[in-house]
Amino acid sequence: MTLDEARALDAADPLAHCRDRFLLPSGKIYLDGNSLGALPAATAARLGETIEREWGESLIESWNKHDWIGAPERVAAKLAPMVGAAADELLIADSTSINLFKLLGAALMSGDRRVILSEEGNFPTDLYVAQGLEALVPGVTLKTVPADQIEAAIDQSVAVLLLTQVDYRSGRKHAMSALNAAARDAGALTLWDLSHSAGAFPVDLTGNGCDLAVGCGYKYLNGGPGAPAFLFVARHLHDRLHSPLPGWMGHADPFAFDPIYRPIGGIGRFRTGTPSILAIAALEAGLATFDGIAMSDLEAKSRSLSQLFIGEVEARCGGAAQLKLASPRDPSARGSHVVFAHPEGYAVMQALIADGVIGDFRAPDLMRFGFAPLYNSHEEAWRAAQALGEIFESRKWDSPRFTKRERVT
Ligand SMILES: *Cc1c(COP(=O)(O)O)cnc(C)c1O
Image (cartoon, rainbow, N blue to C red; front, top):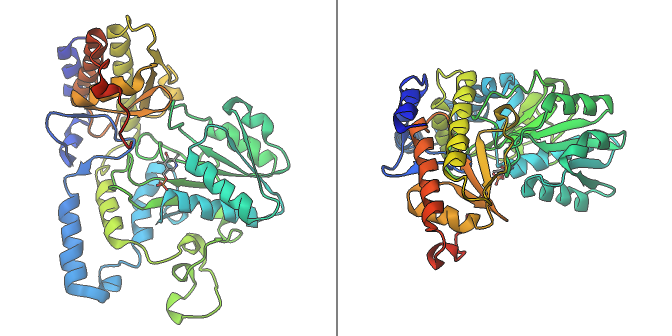
């Protein structure tokens, strides 16, 4: 493909105008929105207003006057259609890790089964939270199996199947509906981590029969570093499940200061403490970058960008014999990031970053490129592939400047 052909795809792209919803540094190609979403153009003003007008002028009255108290549900309602949930099944709260603890704990407390079934390569925090529950609750066991053995491992002992829909390394996407059906047949609940899904492509929690889910606010949702996360509880479970981390904000009447905990009906019982209003305001600005956008257009663009990138990388780096696509080749089988493996992947990624193409590296040998369909262009995908080709051709990566490992992320 020529650069002009890539530009022609951008000219015909129905989402091209969305790039103006972000402030991106010039001279860089940012392909790490799957790790930290870009800064929305509206976020700074929105935070300024929340701080000066709401906090500064209305002070404590803001809990009512500016509906701070309803922010976790109000902002969840904006996210709900993007993940196929009803507004009252979703809550903005805490971090993904803490929400995992709350929902895993709730699933275990709802019955007598004691096995958490997960995947060996699941994201570490998901496994650590499960290990914490193993240590806390007598009899609880975390069982992990390779991806292709999950379905066979679902049996009558499993309390909850804990999976991340899109693998943070390879980008491989699980078949949600089939796994939910197998879990349902065995009487197990399902808990999906949507950290690499929400905001990248349409997720249908209800249509696929998911019981529980969590996800991250600072990746494709553009909520800012450490943004509040979300949690989903299917309506049929609302009265059956109880949070193992109850707090006054999930009480039926928080301002009665009742010494006995009584959970509010519905999703609100999964609140714990006071919501972080400034962080939720930034997340709301992040979600507003999706206003008026069909999730199906987002998915189509994600596939178009990543297929272009794979094709151009393979065309240019065919001589780098050790470079291998480590993601599924079929775009419907992966999320919105693409991974190439190379034994010198770390140094190659450092050289690429020095050339202004920002991806990231995951041990032992994976170079990860995230395509955020709201702001990445076909021209960027083309230029990133070209930059990678030049690095392999010149062996620019083979210098102590790039091979020395010191980066945090
Ligand atoms: C990014 C990510 C998280 C993040 O958890 P935090 O509690 O926000 O640090 C959790 N799970 C998965 C699968 C992720 O990709």
